[in-house]
Length: 360
Ligand SMILES: C[S@@+](CC[C@H](N)C(=O)[O-])C[C@H]1O[C@@H](n2cnc3c(N)ncnc32)[C@H](O)[C@@H]1O
Image 1 (cartoon, rainbow, N blue to C red):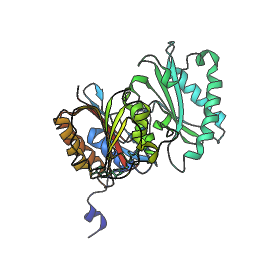
Image 2 (spheres, protein in one colour):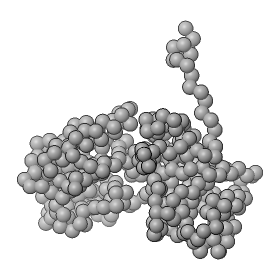
Image 3 (cartoon, protein in one colour):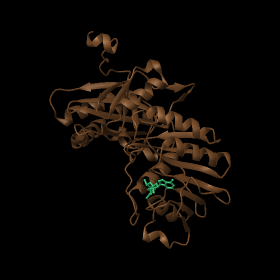
Image 4 (cartoon, rainbow, N blue to C red):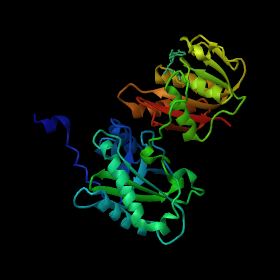
């Protein structure tokens, strides 16, 4: 029996990236997960891997008039122009980019944000300085009149402001795309939202929580009551205490000595599966290193009891079928009445995703 007969018909080779496609950035090594997620979201989107950290599809998946949020996509842009120049002088590509951006922005006076980024890979990351030089050349070529309209992505005032992205594919090739900024996957270049852990935080996990607040656009207010499941050594708890929230940390392991005597912290040295909260709280946090389906069932139970209003959980995904597990975890958590469920592999997430939901 030939190899073909054993493995079934070979998939047709993916078309090369072209104008009209979408480019998606993901964490390196998660291209297959993003391809699977795109396929599940829209069978006709014909996704395929472009390079490490980059995937393409023929369109952006939608449900009705809304875009479907993809857990494994850090950033996305439509390929409105695909530029290739001779040689590797960043000024030449920069001028070509400026030439493409002008018509894409149109004659209006709408503010625009411009971001130039490279895929997160060993091959593409060294192109970062090339990308900076290319951006400077593009800005110079666009001229001061056009640049008066430029704003930082985070400073845009309306969702209709333009978001111009340039993905540098090689030292002579780039894709340029423009969307209304309200439809952006992320406001960070390439979706890499780097946030340093605050000084004194007992673990770097603090960055994951800060990024989650940034992504969801909310976090606890002073005085809010929070439960932190799987809290040790205390990176998340540290962030919550800095926001002047009151925290009950549940973990059989020890909390960092720097936190132990904090007046707003109570540490219950027990398993989250046996802990019973006495009265409802505002926020439920969970960064427990435990099996995802069991964690989901526990979080659903909290939801059913109405024991918390907001949920932020980091779900560990050490297994191969990550997309299927994300689907099952989301389904289980939704049975607890949690609404507006969102899931994303944030920049600081490794073999894990962050989930946000609320019940009001
Ligand atoms: C990734 S660490 C949490 C890091 C923490 N969020 C921070 O910011 O420092 C995972 C934690 O889950 C805890 N854990 C594992 N099983 C648990 C359980 N059944 N109940 C509570 N905590 C558990 C471990 O003891 C460990 O401290």
